[in-house]
Image (tube, rainbow, N blue to C red):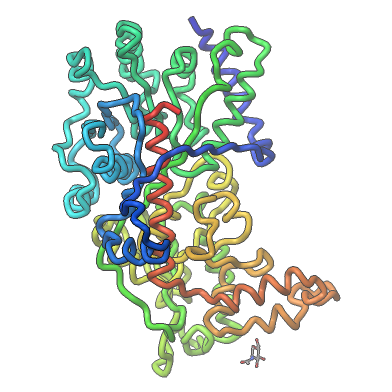
Length: 503
Ligand SMILES: *[C@@H]1O[C@H](CO)[C@@H](O)[C@H](O)[C@H]1NC(C)=O
C-alpha cells in the first residue's frame, strides 16, 4: 500500500515549487492514424479529387470524419462524472467519438454518458441541438452499479472521467469500487481510465493515483496542452523520488493527450469588412484575482482622458460618466460576461456592462456579436496550472482572442493566426485595441512611450511586431475560423483514435 501522508507531503512540496514548470519544453506528441480514402484511385488527378472532395465536403454540422481506428482495443466507453460542471468539456469528448463512429463501422465503441442532470445553464438544449450525444444521459449515481453489474464482453472497458480531480477524490467511493473491479477482472477484460484533468493544484485525488499508474490503468486528457505539461512535470518529479514506494508507482509512463472542447456553434453572425472594432469581451466569473479588470479599467480611463473621440465618446466635462458621441459610428463597448458582481468605475458606466448567468444559448448569441476577446489573466494560474475556458468559448464563437506571444505559447491550440490577434507585450490590451480601432500606432512607432530616451523604433523586432499586428488587423474571416476549428476537431479525433487503440 501507498504511504499516503508521505505522498501528500511530497505533492505539497512539489506544488509549492511550481515556478519551475515554465522550464518544461520536452513534449512528444505522436500521432498514428489512418485516413479513409473517399475516392478510389481511379486515375483522377489530385486536383480533380480535391475538387470532388470539396464539393462533397460536409457542411457545418458535420465536421471532418476522416480518422479511422484500425484495431480499437476498447469497445465500450462510459463518459462519467459526478461533478456538476464541465459538461461542455466531457460531452465534447462524446461528440468526437460520435463523429468517428461512421468510419469505424462495427468497431465503433458504444458510448454511454453518466452525469448529474439537469445540466446547468440550459446545456441540455445544446446537447440536443448540436446532437452531441444521442443516448439518454444517465444519473451518475447509478454509474458504479451499472459498471459492476456488466461483465464479460458487455462490460465497460474505458471510462472517461469528466473531472478526475473530483471524481477520484479521497472522500468519494469511485476510486475504491473501480479499483476493486479492475483487480477482479481477468486480463482480457481490464479497463482504462481516461482522466480529464483541469487544474494541477487540485491535489486531493493524487494519493489515489499510484494505484492506477502501477496497473498502467490510467491516462490523462487535459483540455489544453499546458495543463498536461504541468502534470507531467509533477509526475516526473515524483518518478524520481528517493522513496521506492513512490518511484515504483510508474508515474513516468502516464500518457498525455489534449482534447480541446470546441463545439460547432450554429448561426454565428457575419461581420462587415469595414466594421470598426467596437465590442470587446472579457469572459469568466468576475474574480479580480483571476482577471485583471482593475488594470484594464485604469488603462481605459487614462486613454479616454487623452482623447475620448477615439473611443466614440464625448469629453467628460462635468458629467460623472462618459457618454456616447452621437456622431460616432461605432462607440467602443466592453462586455463582461460571466457570473458574480464587480464594481465598475462611474466614469465607465456607459462603456462597460455586466452580463451574468446567461444560458449557453444566450451566451453563444452574445459572444457571437463580439469583435475581440480579452483574456486579461491576472497572475500565473492560467499560464501554469490550469486552463481558462475563455479560449475555447471565444474561438468556438468565431471571436478572435487578443493575445501576446506568451499566451499563444501556453494555449498551443490557439497558436494560430487564423484565430488570434497578437499584440506585442509592449502594448497592453487597451493600447492594442486603440491602435486596431484607428489603424494608427504612431505613439508606439514614433514615440518614446516610456520616456526612457530611446524610442521604441530602436528595437526593430518590436517595431515589426507592432506593424505586423496592424497589417494583419483584427478581423478573422468565417473561412479562417472554419478551417481552424476543423483542424481542432480533426486533432481531437486523432487523439481519441489513439486512446481507443491504447497507444
Ligand atoms: C495617429 O495618431 C497620432 C496621435 O496619437 C496623431 O497625431 C496622428 O495624426 C494620427 N495619424 C493619422 C494618420 O491619423
